[in-house]
Image 1 (cartoon, rainbow over the protein chains, first blue to last red):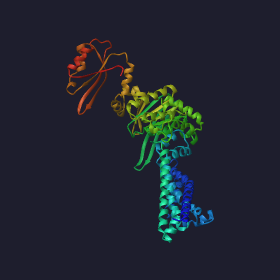
Image 2: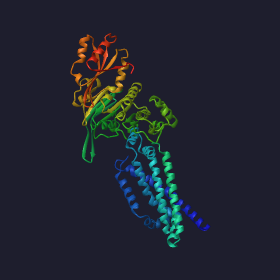
Image 3: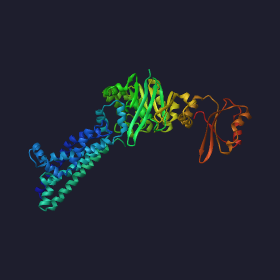
Image 4: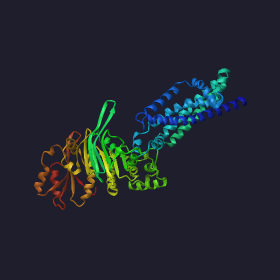
Length: 218
Length: 342
């Protein structure tokens, strides 16, 4: 493999990591509060609110049911307004965040709903406010599950970022499509796929290790 | 003035199968310093009742007045302040599983904005009270059920409450651990003057620790009074059933022995089916002209045959003990010496 190809692949890895990590970060910035709101306002939640829950629920469902590739094209005007252009790794982060946020929100919602109702009741009996219960009980007790969720989110976003390669999104996916699909250079495609698998493995192992270390239930 | 006053309390729940009336007009008065038992079968409404006492459940109708304050008149912040004066412990302990013992006990203090160093100091004091000083850094998953409940008690006491609500606090524990937790609660009641409300379905818990008791059935209080009075003369069907089903726990025999360390020797005798027809004890007393004290008597079904089980105590300084034991053996009874210092 020529030096040019290797440096191209290395750049691909960097771009993929850049997109995935920042999209996950911003995804959580939106998705975490959204997930907390979903779990808190649901029936039987800490402070049920049918209207808020319905609105967030519909938003999450609409975004999640739109295929990512279509979402990517659909929101090009928004991407242009934020980043200034519609192609390249930085531009790809915008649709990634929009697609990831509701997905993350659903996972956060699920994690928080796993928290034992008895512990929440105990905190209420001590006079804790709803905010204190969210911050000091729900997010703490659900920690392991949240980290496992974040690992899944990271992997999924890595996969989405590769899809963005179809429209010039940059990263490993872009290389795989250009070389494997348009030029029939199968060997390069296979290497990019192997690199994607490797990245995915690294995320998964790191996530599991952190979740395991922070879990005090055993 | 009563510490907790409950007046004509009603609570209905909307469930899938329709409306459930958990409380149908409950009235109670709990005085300061009481250890007040609320007993009933499951579904009687006792857990709902205790949750109304700190408004974890808001009653549909009726009044809860705690320390002179009608809980319905309090706003959100005032209600939280009031809750801080009322500790609560639960059947399943409800500790934060991801926090260590020390942080669990600090929790009620941190939510009140107490400084961390101060909270820790208080938590260590409380760990001493519940006898778990060496477990400060342990996580709940590393503790036994009894230890978890001790941590929960320490946590409930952290903000110096004047009332402690216990919802089936010993139901998940074995008899020995139950006994030690009840001793701890008694101790706290004595030393801190805490009013304790105990929800339970075990009559032994009420007998062990409570001074007053309310018996609940189907959302109503069917009987209320001092524990001694209800034990002696239960008026309601549920009361009679609970009293008759109550059998002394292991803990009791121990206190009994400790109380009477000076008394005479004891033996345990076991009747088998055929020996229980003859009035052995009566004949024994008539033969030897000396009374024996029946400490405990029980009939049990052991593997399909009825076995009588009796604890006898000879008069202190009795000279006929050996002869009496022989008499019993001759009548086919199994005998076992029970040491005083067991």
